[in-house]
Image (cartoon, rainbow, N blue to C red; front, top):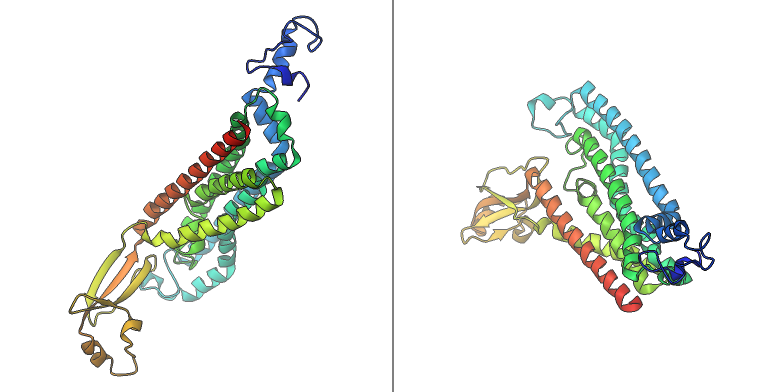
Length: 360
């Protein structure tokens, strides 16, 4: 910023508009327009990019590289599955066409399971990394160094400055994580669930599919920005952001099974219960004459003892199985993503409120 900028009003004019040596000459409109543009939204976006281009550039470049790696991995996985006719097969499968494929499934998992888990882990950890290395320093570094005072003495108000600081990183984060999520979903179509043994309901699988990584990435940015604004210390803000993201992601993980009603299937007392491989089983056990539900641990019946007598003793009349079928995957994902985005929006609103109270 130049000294001229400090005297400009929001429309780029000021007391020196008549020409006092701040332009190229008396009444120099070109000089005023050049200075005024520095405080326009376009100018603020350029300033934010200049300040954070290293982190934003690494995020974009890393996302592009990961997308290429995912495409190559998908091609290799698809070739292996097609060559051995493994689509829909698992190590223990009741599908007749999968008979005799256990060895090939084991070879597939040995070759590609670790790569798939690495991709999942990267998408699950990415939101916390965005919060720590992009969100937390976004405001805290300027508040700590005092450089925000220079910007706020210009015609840029504090709320407009915060909006500009958030807008460009949010767009980059949205583009990068959306692209990565789309590539991973494309990869998952080939090797997810049965063949790889990494199911949609696992912690890593659910956290890396669909809108989930995108929503958490924006949450990480919001958490980091707010902690930086509150603490005004870069390192402390980074540490608190990491802790907050661990707590928030863990809390939503615990809440996840209850976002939709489970599907309950009932069986006869002696019937064998087996859920599909792609179902998320949350509970199973026995039902009694009184309607109570008992797990095997509750009853204490031992298979090597008189199991039938134990069932009679507890007046068992049937069995139950609680599960989320694979059809619940995307509704669960969108519900959780919506809740996460609501939290991110609330934290962003708090950040703007704090900025307005502290800096007018």
